[in-house]
Structures are given as C-alpha cells and as structure tokens.
Length: 78
Image (spheres, rainbow, N blue to C red):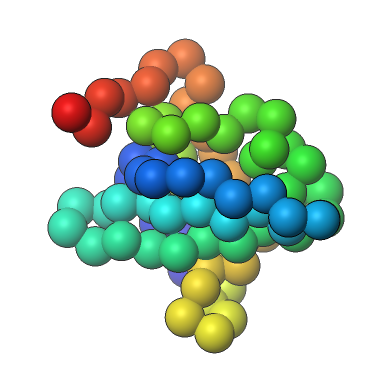
C-alpha cells in the first residue's frame, strides 16, 4: 500500500519505534515505523511535511517499509 499526504499531529517516539498520522485527503492513516526506517523518520520528519509512505497494513496501522519525505517544504495546516 502507498499513501501520499501531510504529517498531522504529534510524532511519537518510543524505543525503536516512531508513530505518526498522515492525512490523505479526508482520510487519516496511522503509520508506524521501526528499526532503520524509524531512525530516518525521527531525524527528518516534522508535522506539516508532505510524505509518501509505502508499507503493509498491520493492526489498523500502516507499517512503513519506505518513506519519501519532502524536507524542502512544510505545509501549514492552519
């Protein structure tokens, strides 16, 4: 599954896991990344950024296997 949208809300970092929400149109997706992907996300990910996430669905969450974060621009949700 691939989703494209904007990071919305708090980014939660716990142990070797990063969790965040991506708003794609009117649909909110809960995303979880672990391991190496979590390290990349915690370094580059900020609320309001555009992101494309590829992964598999697990327990109503998208388990990120790869993400492309647009670090050049942050869209304001306000």
